[in-house]
Image (cartoon, rainbow, N blue to C red; front, side):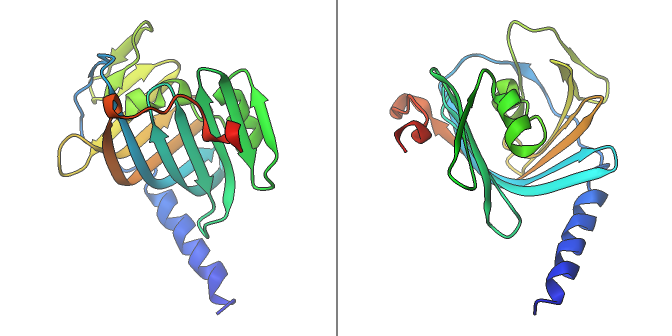
Length: 198
């Protein structure tokens, strides 16, 4: 059984690599209305920097003012948890050590080894551009904003994201959503990161 594990992991890595260049369908973008929408989601994350690639699973909750993302290895071991709320940014690694930083981008770089553009990622996942920053819709349907090119492919419902691809001069980040559940934030009272109570 142990001899098959490296082959299985290699197959997963190869499959993820072949998906980096899959073209995405055009997707309508719209302005963020600031409505009380959030989501709970999970899926797979692939990050490529030059010839190097990293692969993980994620669980991501968007509670409006609170963003929480847990990153796990393909075998289910926790790499780290990142959370942003009105008090700032906090993270916890696999050894339960906690870290704080000025931005979730800086913290993700330190904890995961790459930058997750969490400032607007929840808006981009829902097909919205972030207000107050310049943006451009390209002819191929991608959004350009905050130094990133963002493409989306939708699930069969025509609303929920299936694939979200972000590219800049250094990184290609691909999120494949296995589950995406909208949340009505008007019925929820989540004001701070759960890590702060740990």
